[in-house]
Length: 424
Ligand SMILES: CC(C)(COP(=O)(O)OP(=O)(O)OC[C@H]1O[C@@H](n2cnc3c(N)ncnc32)[C@H](O)[C@@H]1OP(=O)(O)O)[C@@H](O)C(=O)NCCC(=O)NCCS
Image (cartoon, rainbow, N blue to C red; front, side, top):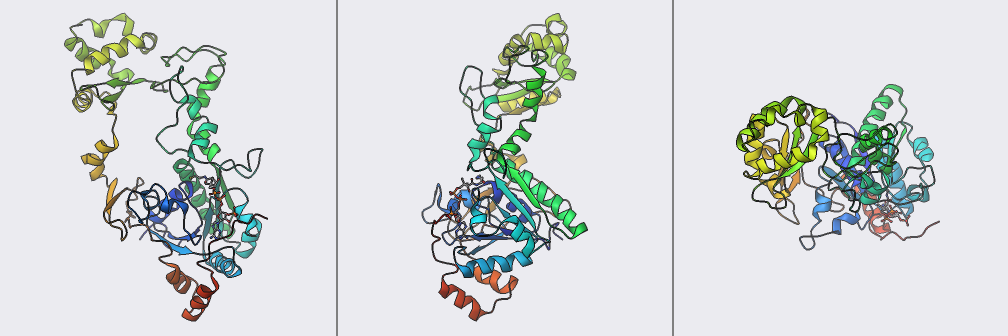
């Protein structure tokens, strides 16, 4: 049995942050009804690679869902929404501030209609505070949650990271909140409002930078290769420094291409073995006993020299060869994997992290697999729905509407008229 079998979700989310969450819940067995405006989630048409086909942006975030299109700017559309609210366990949305309120559905109203329903809401900055009225996208959240100011090198500009910590990271936070609220609902019979702000989610993921911020009140950060000192204020950008108790850095390997790097953590326990191996290859037999590198404190103080030696050692090997050498010495390390490397990687394939799917508009394509493995409830990944593919099915199966009623609603424009952008 799927873990979330029997949980029905009214999913009004769009773009990435919300759909990440509902896709994960669908992969755990929830019945996710993606409730779209008649023109669909905007990402269906964004960054298209195949003409007239749903984009990968959409297909990769909306698997295992059913799609229903409803025009919420009609009285009939609102009635369908209310009917669905009554038979769902969760409603979730990540509209811009105030959109659902403008439809006439505040949390209080939704709770009144179905006191058992749990509501999940993602906003850029939450529903309170001076930023509450602002919209947000991934990089806005990375900028405002502390990620950008701490990513890059001190004398360069701040950088965004490739990991979608603002969008997908927030979706993960919401999934945790929804499952907790559902558990409470099952005990008390009362739903509750679960809010995750993207800025808050990014701050949560930047927790160690806050650790460093406060450490700077008392002294410099010895593990950083960039200069730091007591009272310097903000935690600095520190390139590829490990940011943890162990020293780490990205080391260039043969043949010197843009992804021919390996990340190496010089864990305290492995220095002796690493230094002996390096010493033998670099004709430095004294390296393992060199007092400059004897303890982690000394290695921190002399890390520029240490990284230079490890770099010389690495240059003779490809990142894969170097990984093998380091693995034999039990040195924690990881080659920098390009998307092409990942696509071809045996481990990734064996873990089911690249999943081949078919789609009526685009043919064969690949999704990233389910990262959470439940032993009694393995995910079965199915393609994303086409726009409105399940409108009739949901109306009839879930709401019990008869064919005549569905036809009458269709004629009234409940599923098809483009919504008017009228703000009250
Ligand atoms: C992502 C975001 C910036 C997009 O902004 P946007 O394209 O202007 O979209 P909004 O969510 O503000 O508005 C959606 C519009 O579609 C309309 N709409 C949505 N579903 C509808 C439906 N079923 N029927 C009719 N209209 C519908 C809404 O009424 C709204 O129109 P309005 O402004 O006239 O009220 C914004 O949704 C946002 O800030 N969301 C919260 C943070 C977030 O999740 N960011 C994205 C991370 S990937």
